[in-house]
Image (tube, rainbow, N blue to C red; front, top):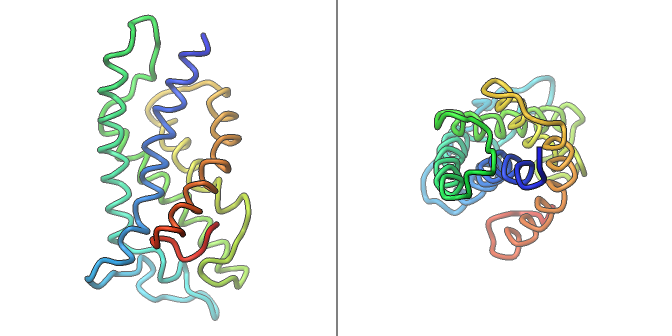
Length: 177
């Protein structure tokens, strides 16, 4: 496997996952009622996920992951034929977005069990949970190199932090982490 293959295959997973993960905060300013995924249910004194995890956000993230995956697939199709991309059906990109949100939900669930409020900074948990969910989702469709996992886990905190700072400055994120 050559470096170009690894880069393309990594981006084939990361770009839809990043877009999926970054999409739900744009719903904050939308003038319609959002429906919490946990329907307000609690475990003990704390919500299961909290108000920040909504049905609308889950749907938006999955759709955006899918659409971005289709765009990535198009760009891969115009690359030189010597580059080997992952063999992913279009539907897999929907599941990359969904996997990102399931990973994020697991992180949120864990934070609520620790009694942390919405927006509390959990360092790497907040940065890696969604990408791990996406990597697991892709694994159902095709095998991939451990290089991809390593690159994803190293690159994601950098991209995540930068995206959150930008999101905070433009008003779609409540905190810059």
